[in-house]
Image (cartoon, rainbow, N blue to C red):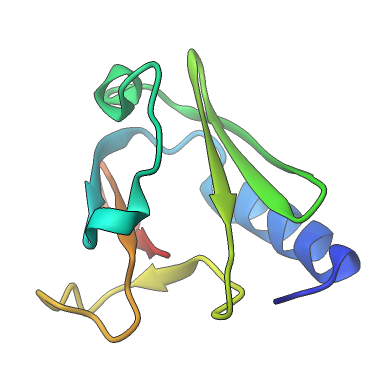
Length: 106
């Protein structure tokens, strides 16, 4: 589990790389990837990423009107997913974006 300074740096990097990207789809890859969802993730489809922050050790990935609260677990990162394998190793969920923006794998 990354420490708070690492999470802050990761949030800043993600925001710099992905701010303004339009969410096409959120795909849970395991049943544990989506604990509770009100509103549903599809409410963010077609919305632009407006910011990435943190609250404690959770990343906040914000698409108005939906904010995804992400716990990084042992892996510790949301990574660009260029391979798009069907069952990525240790993959929990995938954020897919419009255009040439690479997907993010949790």
